[in-house]
Length: 294
Length: 188
Image 1 (cartoon, rainbow over the protein chains, first blue to last red):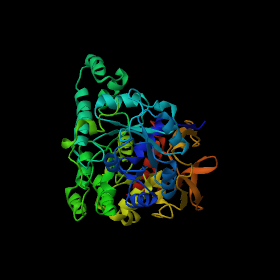
Image 2: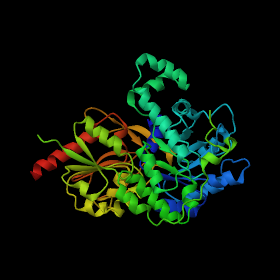
Image 3: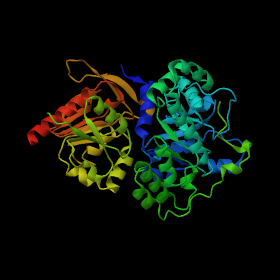
Image 4: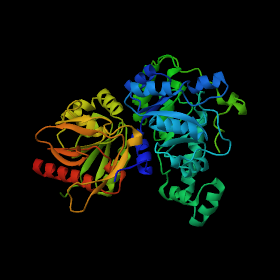
């Protein structure tokens, strides 16, 4: 009678995270700070994206020991990343009873043509997307939540904005198309017609859509929410800043009160140094993480 | 009965948009509540699902916890909202709630719930759901899963461990609106 792992149950958890901040953490102490600051979930990692970027080499799923330590430290949902297409890492994360798997371009891809078949899992998946077609392909593979990618580990919001404009803007344009034009549009975005039609009819993706990549300030969080995000992922932006706890709390408040400039002004004041960051415009195309995913 | 009901939906974090959508479907005007002054003139309030630690913190920060203690209209809490109403938090419902009682997300489920209604069972979605561990003598238990209470009423307070806003069945919201109509006709 009781059914686990239905799409309603999988996407349902993402629904509960809306209006919230999901924070990258690398140990139990950071996880506790994140929880006490009002994070709705944490992403358990060995290294934050800024360090993965600086260290180079192959980035893989985190050590289960790190993940379990974080699971034991908090009561909020714990997410973890697997490499694109690395279904064995995903199986391990499911065995650890992780609450959400992020099939992430931040890690080094394991498959250059295929993503994980996410329908085979009871644990829900969140996947990155830079445009509408990519988001819909991930949904076809069974993703239960989408995050626009941005450029992780840079502290530069510009790519996140580009991707949100691409996804949300395209959805708005889709709603104005004639029915017969949707067939061609489905071909153009390389996604199933039924999904394209659903999105055109409803004016949104069928799952919760967060924003990630480059969020470093309360104003960044507000910008994302005003552009249409359901919530935000903050990776390196918190624990690579001068005063992580204060910044974490401020970004949480900014995500709730994203439409109230007076509150935003107050919570933005005196936060200390933001993460130094890298302008994504100065990155060589080979250093971009957002282009990973097919 | 004639006037349009105004029902607040606490919108600091969580699944408030879907609750608002159900209210609209039932021809009730939803009002998003993020600050204490937005409670004024409401006929009832819904505390949605979300993360109870985040919601509790944001409520305290903006004085919504105190404001809710003096809010005297009916309140409906789902999942995290049920936790927020229990003895250990706002203390508005005489219940003790066990958080994440059904386990992590892999154990989240949907099931048919017997709500003793002529129209049959209710499909209910449980997401990392809590259950009621202990309830005072005046609390009416309305549904259970494996012997654990998951739907209950304590006077003007209605609580559910599951998410009626995630299905198309509006019976639980209608039940709450009946409480609201009862309360406002008594008050008027």
